[in-house]
Image (cartoon, rainbow, N blue to C red; front, side, top):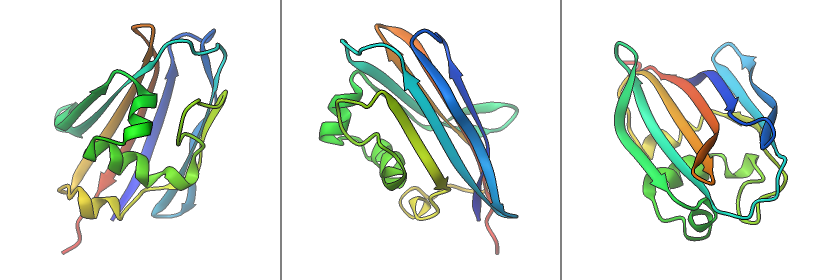
Length: 155
């Protein structure tokens, strides 16, 4: 069993981006859906860099397996050239408008449930995890998204 436990959205520069939604909704006792909406307030003239990290909780959240950096989000969306990032993006592809460039002025992820099928490709042991996604523009971190989830194995 796996489910989202928390989501945190931070806009470092509210003149550049603002979150209009960032929350989890309880659908059932063991099911939560995530919804995010972020408005980009400036015209993008340079590439957006992204960093995606997988962390596991052990006396705080520590790096676990993956720390992926791409200097251009649009280049990644065109080529889809990293297996771990592909698992993340493909899991919410049907729930978002972030699939290709140019990016829309409002990015959203709606009614996204934990992708249990992704665990077939990325088997993780029981525990508490986080995925940190950092997006930078003009070499400055602009958006930090932290998604927390738990995985419980039944035997």
